Amino acid sequence: DFGRESHGTQQIVAMSKKVYDYLVLGGGSGGIASAKRAALHGAKAAIIESNRIGGTCVNVGCVPKKVMFMCASQQEDFTNNTFRDYGFDVELKQFSWARLKERRDAYIKRLNGLYHDGLKSAGVDEYEGFARFVGPNTVEVNGETIEGKNILIATGGYPAVPTNDTIPGAEFGISSDGFFDLEEQPKNAVVVGAGYIAVEMAGIFHALGTKTHLVIRNPEFLRTFEKMLRTTLMEEYEKHGMDIMKSSQIKQIEKVGEKNFKVTFNTGAVLENVDCILWAIGRSPQTDIGLDKAGVKLDSKGFVEVNEFQETNVPNVYAVGDVCGKWLLTPVAIAAGRRLSDRLFGGKTGSKLDYTNIPTVVFSHPPIGTIGMTEDEAIAQYGQDNLKVYNSRFTNMFYSIQEHKAPTVMKLICAGPEQKVVGLHMIGHACDEILQGFGVAIKMGATKADFDNCVAIHPTSSEELVTLK
Image 1 (cartoon, rainbow, N blue to C red):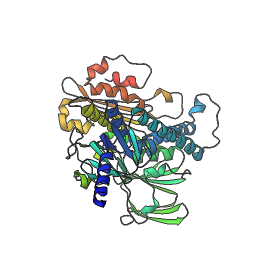
Image 2 (image 1 turned 135 degrees about the horizontal axis):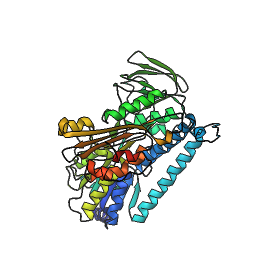
Image 3 (image 1 turned 30 degrees about the vertical axis):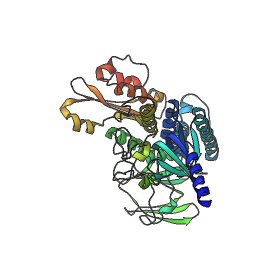
Image 4 (image 1 turned 90 degrees about the vertical axis):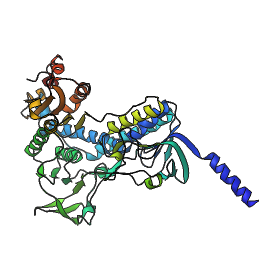
């Protein structure tokens, strides 16, 4: 009898096991977009997330960072006497980091709620917990086994930080995630890293009045970007007083007192009375999800290996976003996830993301907008003789009546006899907002003649791109 009862229990369990057409691991931007699109096509979909819904971008990335960027930009207007020069008699009495954080956190909490509501209205089931593969098409979360006929890995990544073994005292630093947990504004901050996250956060600290030291291992930061962009930005940062410690690495961090650190560098330089060290040295993929049980392969850098259709080596297991290590940008994950669902459930055979000519922005001070090849990349592909490069440097009209001036610099790279636009790079006031429309044109294969044939909008900075000579 006991044997039959046990057998019967197993049957009941087997019958009650949940099975989905589409099971998404990770409730970040890419996973949410893909799950909702799958549900829109009629698929039974579910999403599993162990942290706050929305992933890195919503909680500790693009969204709160943009809030901080906009706040820092307001502070710059006070610092540079913008309001005075425009005729306003205003005085900045104080800035409250705590008030800003309170408002920012409340905004993010509202967004979390909207994401939950959006998934519910789309008919996507949500599971809160950490999922691990227990087989090629099965995961376990909170002790429950769930099967997916198709499974998407969209687990994203996390900030890489050094260990105390590599840098004594490294534990005293925070990551880019920790930046958003700061209850008080640091007075003397060290930001370590040469990528866009480091450059953006150093810019925010500096604009808000924190004494800021940006530590980079090489003579330049943003080394994969167009040289004109990184040169102009470094000039602006240094001109306004940011300490950029070039060809430098932290050797040791010593805790002197509460929020008081001594930082020693390989160059022999020493910084004292530092109250914040922020590591922004890269990101690692979140792959500790039992991928070995599913047989999913990783590449040499530890990212999930996928082909152009976001397929892993395991049938019906896919991956999008930062966990793949290619174009670690929220809109890329969203676009790739939606196209995947269109192909799997919407009948759009061949649907996939084209990873060429992806526009991107750096929310530095001033901001950067860029799409396509750098000049060096274009030379390597087309040859110097087959390129025509247009450059412009001017002062945005915003600064026309101000004592303070800041440059806008633009570059258009064209290839072949038809002068197809293969690269567009700009830095300056509002360049972050200008890029999107030009991105559409370049994605469509626009030529210099197409740019010239568009009537300029005057007076704007963007008109410069359609009047270059």
